[in-house]
Image (cartoon, rainbow, N blue to C red):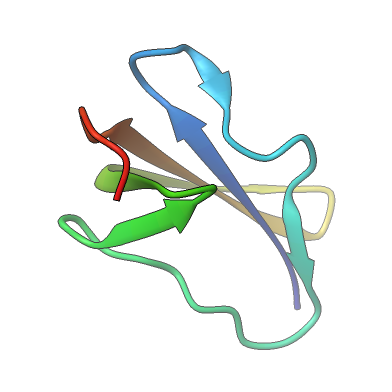
Length: 70
């Protein structure tokens, strides 16, 4: 099973990573309230959306960035 994971910053209206994380096996998918750390910034997971396209499960994780760097 192919999986693509996208992280999207709701406030900035852009993807946090330029390309999705891809996997052909199990992939950790954060849940609401989890925090992703990128370049010293914390991104809090707000919600997730799952959809299936061309044999690939695509997951978009919507996040909001914290006000201060960690």
